[in-house]
Image 1 (spheres, rainbow, N blue to C red):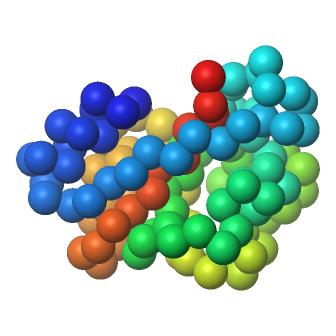
Image 2: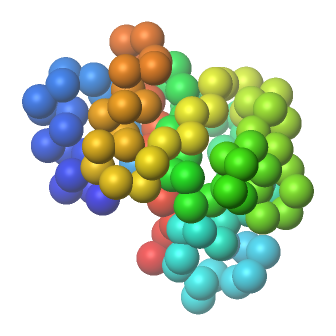
Image 3: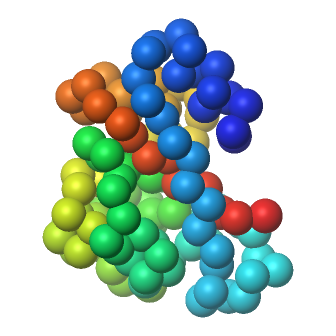
Length: 114
């Protein structure tokens, strides 16, 4: 993910940062992004400068893309983290589509810490 984001930053001139989030809900040995919870995101990202927006891969949400595994919804994440949260398709194209939704500025891309 780091390499992909570095290349994407060079090509788009949009500052992207990958943020690793430890899975505390299921334990640090679980490094599957789809098993991240809203509580882990809030606990580890609250109060940090997350730039203009936070891009989340769709695998961290349920089918409706609005609710996370632990019943925390995207609106609650936005309120707690004080930044727009954009749920994007997990493919590389999803990040590009997410960037199209956001104004210029630094953007955080979340992935599970491994």
